Image 1 (cartoon, protein in one colour):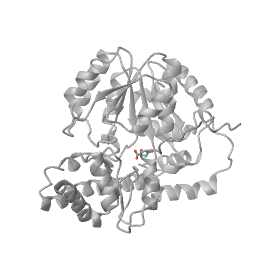
Image 2 (cartoon, helix red, strand yellow):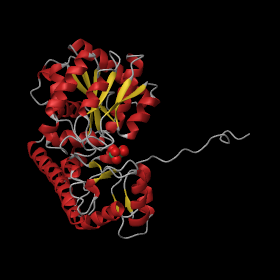
Image 3 (spheres, protein in one colour):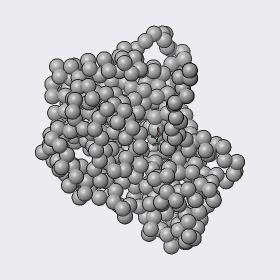
Image 4 (cartoon, helix red, strand yellow):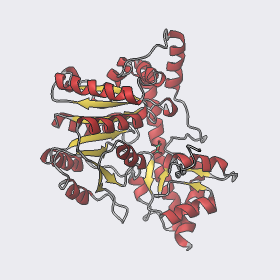
Length: 400
Ligand code: LMR
């Protein structure tokens, strides 16, 4: 008898699968605008110098590889909480907010999903349409009822009115997932006035916000990007935030992130955290140590921290100049207006407005790889190749 005979294959991951397809493409002119990793002018995903220096220190100073606790590295959790919420946030002093270390931001999302499923049974979760495809599968895998609110309309514009109208219909007490900045996949972010409107609906419907904060520092800056998170933390008694160090510290494969919980008082926070530790024990037992130790070393050291924040500024500025550069490169084809949104969007990603068929043609005819939804990782473009990319877009838009 074959135990595996009835097992069917499933399609590969819509994002990670692109990495394999890109690697296998022999065309030397290929362009990888798929998976969300930052690339520098040399086309490399660099390890920031601050990370390298912190790693050197760790090699010298680390004394043990014994397990870290269920919430992970305490120094990391403390510094990351300050980075997200602000060093002087009263919630931290009142012990009403704390972080639990997780394997990346994805681990934090899964932990949040398990927390809702186990501790808040019956609550559904509401995701933006569109959202990061893995949001859909993570919450479904935890058994949650998944619903959607509109975010970007058919005309590829942020539709705040439709979003607010849909949020007003969400069942009382459900969970709503919001992207703090650098919305994945669209790159369209809410303005402060929009966030205030969302907050009013969250209060009126008594929703529990789960804020996905995977790109702190990639939008407008470390502090600016945290504005909405801090607004919600100040205005609401309870909140969940997922934070990732993959992009802003360049620690992708080290799987470094955290789930932050904010509660009405310190006792309730302790109760919530006891549940999180128990759930994490069944998922990954204790989180991986290295990336968190690197982040803690950087954030605890004024010099390393300054170096890191400058390196992050460089990454953000490069993406911003690639965005404007691409729009300018499209101007000779009379396409600058049509793709002006690329200059307005924030973070790595742009919802280009290209159709799945056009994305397929980009891949087949020009070896340009992007996600089928039309999402392009603008950070993947080489500045020298903006003209090539613009030409490919132009050929798609003018040829049938
Ligand atoms: C992305 O959206 O490309 C990144 O967040 C990487 C991933 O894990 O999907």
